[in-house]
Image (cartoon, rainbow, N blue to C red; front, side, top):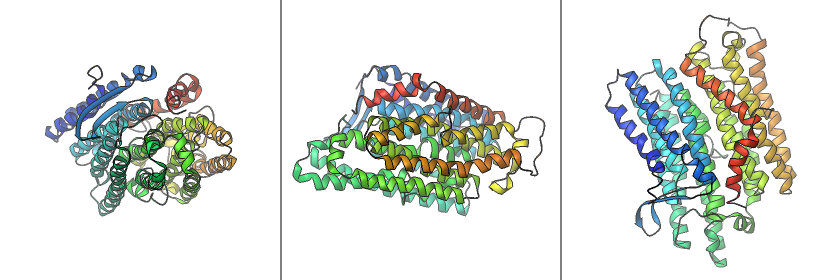
Length: 490
């Protein structure tokens, strides 16, 4: 165990302690509950951020907690790829915690909500810093179990049905990963994430088995990443409270899926083996189908949160497509989009939550003129939407630029056309919301005072500033960060 770096253990254990404290606080003790949640998530973020200098200096933090049998144990390894997911998750969890305080103020069973909200952060940190496939699987399932009570929080028949579908898909995907664990361990005797991969050690006669394992892993992690046709749990999970929807789409579950795919590509298989297996093109077709069909389905939605949900399915495809291009620019774009999409999509869901809280309206045809009553909220929504469309100088354009460049770099210009086509579809399903909110007559009028509780509005506006800053100063922030990851891949 690396005693100089206890931060990974702190990031995983402190939320468990925080959840226990919240559970034993009185239901009426809202101040204590909120303070405990904020302090807990704040400690997690500080612990993760404190490891960033070591990761940027390319110092590996390696902690082996326990080995059950040879090669199967709880093992944390903090590298640049894990830091991408860990830092994005922990930082945005802080914003979501503040937002939850305002959003949940008039909701029922707040104590139960914050218990599992905090526990889910523990699971996400375990996913980020897993040092082998077994540890990743354990925390992958832990995350599904912790988020299930949040999905069914409303207690309605609709939420229960959505929760059953969500947990069924999650556990089924996890089962495929578990099967792969035993097959990989039997094949090469290790599960440790290694730059360049571990499955290259398999013999030529085992290549068919290596291909089968790849399919199992893609299906397992692809379920969380909402790759079609494994996506239907995601729109259904929109019955959850809006802060949970934001975490599901921007930070936790779906990002755990694309992060798992990244680990498979670069820490289990490696670029050379993936090229030799010649399976990338088939997966690329599936991803392109996901991007385009997800975007078309977003256009058809008449409920705001559902339109955002189907948008997420398409946007996740950008990340996976960039990664599977296996070119430096493509991988750069895919990994940067993990960051950019997280910031922009959580902003959009925060805005949706404020609109629902203040107006009680959920359908898009009910939101004409809402910009008069909630100008700051709709301004934030507009910036988030324009960012995901790739409009400069908001952060989203950086990742799209690199994925387009990566498509050409890899000699696959057809994927550039897919990105450009989906960008047009992004505009078709986002721009009418913005135009109708500001320029179409409706029942809304300007009212004095805050348009939403400050605990909801302030973190949303800060995220807008972050998204613009990330676009303007990408050469000094996200790009050097991701270049550290690329040095372990190429």
